[in-house]
Amino acid sequence: MKPGLLVRTFVLLCLLASPALAADDAKPAGYVQEARGQALAVRGGQSRELAAKGPVFSGDSLATKAESSLQIMFSDGTILAMGPESLFSVDEFVNEWGQDKTLSNKMQFSYGPGVFRAVTGAISDRNPHAFSVETPLGAIGIRGTELGSVVQAPALVGGKPYPAALAEAFAPGANAANILATLRQAATAAVPGEIHGHIRGAAKRPLAFTDKMGKSVDMAVGQGVTVSRERGTSDAGPISGVLSTTIKTAPIRTSAKIPAAFKNTLGDTPGSSNSNTDSTTTGRSGSSGHTGGNSNTGGGGTGGAR
Image 1 (spheres, rainbow, N blue to C red):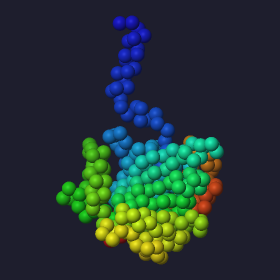
Image 2 (cartoon, rainbow, N blue to C red):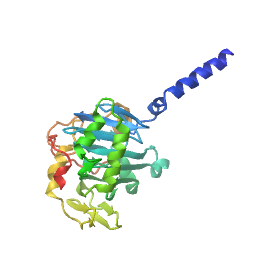
Image 3 (cartoon, rainbow, N blue to C red):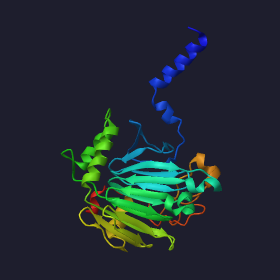
Image 4 (tube, one colour):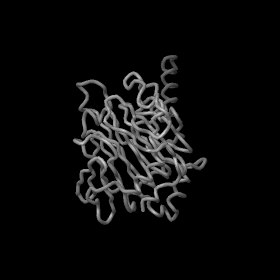
């Protein structure tokens, strides 16, 4: 065999033997700013532990274990926090800087059961209709805001309590990809309710929720909705006290440092020079969002919204 052909054959065999190699070459959509407890990501059938500074990619499905939390910053400055026993997916993420490419940018996420808090970044600021979140009972239209959500977990998954079924994904040697897929299917079929709230933001950009029955509700700042599988979404009203309490388990920490890969576009903010106390603002350039929450991680999972 000729030397050149031998080298090409060897390279091809290496690529075929390492399906994760191509995935590792993908451009990260974001990075973990803080991780407490245990969290993992699944992509392309492969799972990996998540820790501070670890990359998050478009196509990732993420999970946190009990008494754990995760904070991610995406390349446009959007911050997402997950509380304990939460499932989240980055379905699509496109962020190309430059005026000619602004309208092609897109963020599409999915919430499974869990506790979530988000502050939007440049994509939503520039194109308010480019950021949406699918939930088991509907969809959130995010137009430049800070929002909080609680998605209740189904009682049982495969005959096991939901927390026990989720914990199996973190067991040594577990097929986390299959377990997370099963949990998401169960959520789609059996999540009993959700709570969403517009914590802070611009008055001209209400947060919108559309349920599976087609009813759409706009939430002004300080308003929220409760959603049930049987009745769909409520009308907008004061933010639920359950949400206000539960989202403390998904704090946004303004002291978390900007990922090094994003400093050229985002600078040193938000939060890198702020104290790690009760947060007042993310400090993100060009943002209308504020945090306004507590920095305590707290305990508990998704059952408090029942």
